[in-house]
Amino acid sequence: MKIFISKYHKLSKKNIEEILLNFNAIGQSFFAGKKHRRNHIKIIEKEGEKFNIKSFKQPNFINRYVYVLFRESKAERSFKYAEKLIKKGIGTPKPIAFAEEVVKGALTKSFYISEHLDYDLTFRDLDLTIPGHEDILRAFTRFTFKLHENNIEFLDHSPGNTLIQLNNGDYKFYLVDLNRMNFKPLNFTGRMKNFARLTPDNEKIEIMADEYAELIEKSETKVFKKMWFFAHSFFVKRAKNRELKQRFKNFVGIK
Image 1 (cartoon, rainbow, N blue to C red):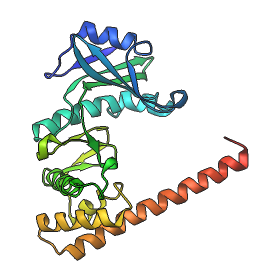
Image 2: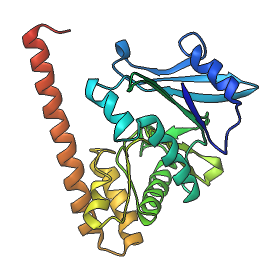
Image 3: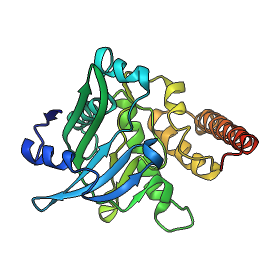
């Protein structure tokens, strides 16, 4: 297995090899997909410190070769994007290493290791009936504006992928699940579309639109209409897809 270690690393290559070799037997599962169809994330403690180890699901037959010959693996992209974000002053858990196992020219296993970060909330936890949460939502919107100003399009900008530390009102935001990003200037439409996956909640979108409009110096009405259009379209489409998927499962008798 090839292992690539970051300058931020806190683990020796020997320790990393030991962790990956015993991945299934050690640590605490943070997220585990069913029957290897999803990624598996574990929290592992080593030398008094905690680390997150993400084991990516095995790619389909074609991608096993694509990731070796033509495109960087999800593990490598996560690692490189984390280093890019840090250089741009964007919060993300520090990258430690990534590892890949290639057998007969095909990628069979890949891992991404980062520091474990304690946090208080994610976007999903924001509740406007709780005092202070509107302030957090506005700070999150300013953080998203900072991403856009730094030419960062976080394609998985969804409710669970930004960790929030409250830090006595000096809110800190950290991106996770990094393997899908573009680094390019974003026009107004692209910026608004980047909010689409976050929420179908009209009130939250109104607040984000109000905050973003001031930052980008456009009317709140124009920002809201565009932001709401993309969010509404995304969640309507997702609901229809889920309904069709469930109908198909019912038809073929899948539980």
